[in-house]
Length: 127
Image (tube, rainbow, N blue to C red):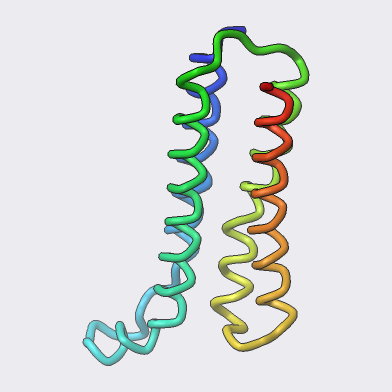
């Protein structure tokens, strides 16, 4: 498999995750500014998740600029990274529903940490 197919697959899965992320945002209770502002915690959590996914996407594409070929280990490492990324809509909703709960924040942080670890694993496998 070429690196272009792998990055295209990553892009497609990430686009789906980002779509699910935005679809999980709550609608305001009314069409008023105060109802929109009441959802500020949800918007903050969404924005954080969105930009973490953007940073991951940028890092992956920058990394793959220097890659010449990939093997099965790289495919598995990439799959593990995507697996962890797929939890983002879940933990984002969990945190936005329980904004100050330590358990929700803990799981949010665990997903962040696992994405970092899976990215390091991917880079190590590429090396």
